[in-house]
Length: 253
Image (cartoon, rainbow, N blue to C red; front, side, top):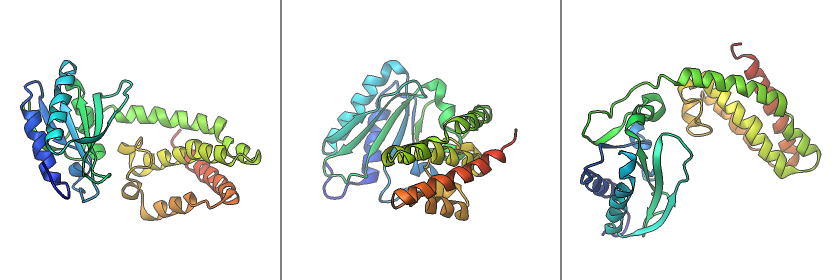
């Protein structure tokens, strides 16, 4: 059992041993901040596990038994998945651990491993073990076509729905206006900016923006986000729409 501050390396070593004991597990690596070399005292632990779907229950049983030996599971979130690359994903926090020390365990289908290993999107995996030699950086060849189609759709969506934030604000519905501003203007603007400055991470939303955008562009976006009140929101909606329209117009046709 761990005492006092939770030991990050002890958690990793315990999970490594527990998963290596499951014969069906083909490999395990650390993703997230570990893969980018940016892990610090506030980082969570992202564990990717290659395993066939029929062994998912056995694998989570091994994970949870190991975490119980470390002091017990204080909270668990079983992520509802609809398709995607994962078989299943769960987040854990241990008793006595700070809130930010989450343990994210994602079970990956063996036929979907490459989609997780694009080095620009996901970093270079820190491999704990690899029984099949599958865990190595590999470019995701499907990205370009998928992202190009997304940008076409964003143009059409903005042309039809970009007015919604201003309309709701004109009705005095500040909450709805803020929501539509974030969803249809800020979210779209960020994706278009990523298409220019970080094209392999176009679908990452607002994550890692301070790393992916030039400092002056990030500062402009940061200033835009600090709206203050309803009047500030109105100005931000107008400014965002203007900036977004400029970026969309600059996209290749």
